[in-house]
Length: 82
Image (cartoon, rainbow, N blue to C red; front, side):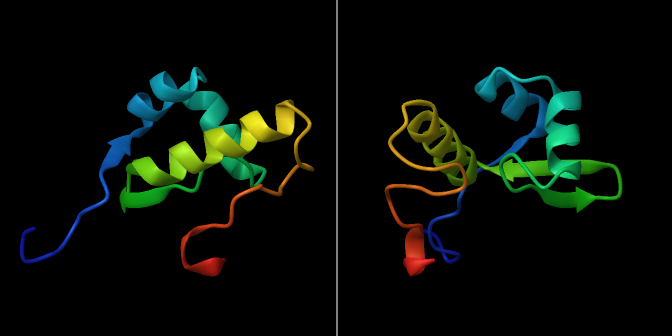
């Protein structure tokens, strides 16, 4: 482990679009509506997504689609008890 500990990888908007099978413009529309995985503003013109946030968001969507939980809820609590 380095001096900064374990770093959670940040991926680009295009990599997130590929991983979620959504277009970058759909991700931007979802963000404007307060939906989709949380994103980070990396610079004035660039955003990124934490890999763990994408994975958590995809898992929640799969749970919702299977009827295991209500929209906006997850069967598993977030890290830190949130």
